[in-house]
Amino acid sequence: MVIPVITLAGSLQDTTTESLSLFKAKRLFEQADSLKKSDPQQALVFNREALSYAHYVKSSELLADINRLMGELYITENNLQPAINYFLISEKLYKEFGNKKELATVYGHLGRMYYNNNFELDKALSYYNKMMDIAMEIKDKQLMAASYDNLGSLFLSLHDKEKAYGYYHQLLLISEEINDQTGIGKALNNIGEIERHRGDYEKAFDYYKQSLAIHRELHDIRKMAINMENIGITYYTMNKPEKALNYYLQSLKYYQKANDQENISSVLILMGRNAIKLEQYQKAIEYFNKAKNIAAKNNYHRYYMRALKGLSKAYERKHNSAKALDYFKQFEVYKDSIFKINERNNIAAIKTQLLTELDNTQYKLQKYEIDMLTKDKKIYRLKMNILIAVLIIIFLSGVLLTVRYKIIVKKQNQLREKDAELHHAQQELLKSELNSKDNDLMSFALHIVQKNKLLKELGTNLKELSKNSDPDTNKKLREMSLYIKQMLQIQEDIDLFDQKVSQTYDGFFHKIKEHFPTLTKNEERLCALLKLKLSSKEIASINNTSIKAVEMSRYRLRKKCGIDNNTSLTDYISCL
View 1 (cartoon, one colour):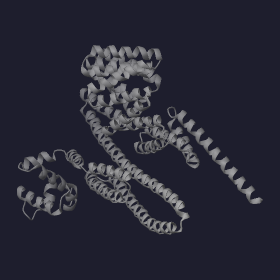
View 2 (cartoon, one colour; view 1 turned 90 degrees about the vertical axis):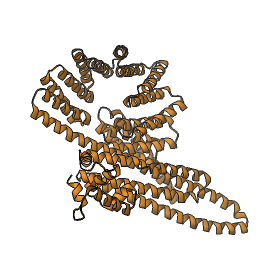
View 3 (cartoon, one colour; view 1 turned 180 degrees about the vertical axis):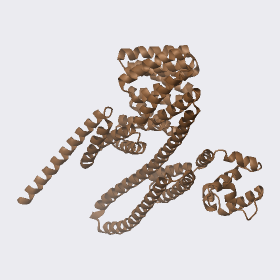
View 4 (cartoon, one colour; view 1 turned 180 degrees about the horizontal axis):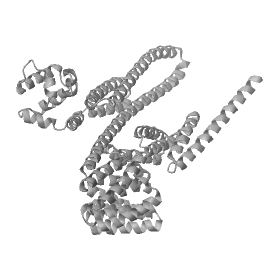
């Protein structure tokens, strides 16, 4: 009698512990959610703790919400890599239990991340379209309005004013339909932006003022600040700096009331440019310095960069060449560092996408195997009544389990190899950040080779798997193989590599043309690769050709350039 009592007590204790953990996870998540705007750092602490409790109780719905909030919090920290990871986890969980509304919200976050950081705008468009598809499917007009707003902003940034106008007009119509004054105000302001870009300033003023009237009724000081700022920009564009200043000052006052530090720095930069137009150079310097200090304190990289450029221009107009040059050098150095940060974010996003696709493939294969095992057990139990059938099933099951075990071992080995390769690639990336510009370009070149190799191997493995799969799985594997083939179009990577070489060695191609005007484009690229001191093997890998072909190209280049055999071709090119 003792054993059942102990078992029951242990079971009750486990149930109590799980209930308590679930309660703590929910409570911590609610606290984090309430602090995400006012104190994101503390919110992150609470949400991490909530995540640990939610993992313990294995609550998929709560885990999805916590991972989504974790992504939102990392966005406020401008830490894009973990933000993408958490959003992709929440996307997978929301899909599993069919929460389409929250799934659409996650797609909106992912789209804005790619859009706001100016890399892979096609991915931003893809996520925005997914969000819109769900909004249409579930007929959620608030989600539709948010999707129209997102798509309008994206196409406006791409200078496609007609498409942007169409989406903002749809935003206005649907906001009027559901009597959403905030949405109406936003749509009117954004249509005003399009009219300003078109050069129809009177229409722009009319839309801005309609939007401003709505925001005044709503007492939304931040949106009022945006309206004032846009009116100021319009007057500045019309070459009326005195009127522009008046609206900039009103906008600044509202942003300060809202404690919106990012937009305070933005308006200060606009006021600095306006002061230069008014030939108030000392005032411009004051505005730019204030903007620079705020941007430095809050890590607003683009505004810090603009403030440095503004200071350089102000001192130049003030005929202080030394300070103008100093600030311009600071601007150039900072611009290079921001470019590297964006490149790292871009590469990290690509790696995350590849890892997620690998995880999804593994997950689907495991699920398929579980389904197959379940079916086998049913068949096995069904035929246990007949001795001959039992013997046949035992024999076939033994063979099937052996084959399946070999497949599982093979898959596990392949996945370990992929993990090792990805880990190695990650280590190479981290090391490349500590090297010079030459090493950075070499790492990028090797990254192209490594990525193509990985994709080719993955494509081969998927083709192998499709031989032993059922028709549905086989179809999905073929779709993935087709996607991988599309990704193997490396011309875009080569073009980006050429662009990086041109930026790093400013004037190099011009010198090559002056010395050797008869060189072809391929020979110019070979010169650039030799300047990086790359070996023939490395050059062959980048150009997807043989070492012998590279050696022949080097021979022809030496002959065209008139370089004798006693002179190193690489040293000669490096001196140019």
